[in-house]
Length: 126
Image 1 (cartoon, rainbow, N blue to C red):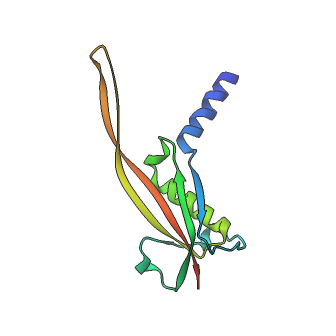
Image 2 (spheres, rainbow, N blue to C red; image 1 turned 180 degrees about the vertical axis):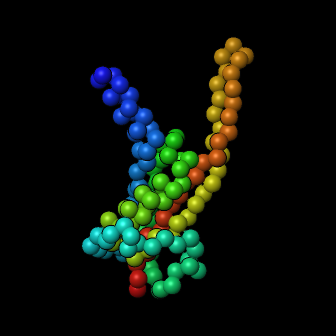
């Protein structure tokens, strides 16, 4: 039973253990946290309807599996931004491919997968 519990814990971590690392700008000051729903997402600076300044950036530190789930990455960025008291997040997406394969004795395989690397620009109203 302990073995099964350990395997389940490992599987959950591999599937969702991405962390959001905050890199503050030079002038960022601490702010009170907000609710997740109070932090709007924007996908371009043109979408932001207020004057803003950059508070910092949130960069995902991804595991192999979490790179494939951009929605989970965006939600983690938004949650971190809410903890920081942000007025919004501008989502920057980077797409790419990741290749892997192994061959032993001339037998093996090779695969290429689509991956997503999401970063968020944390903004506050001026």
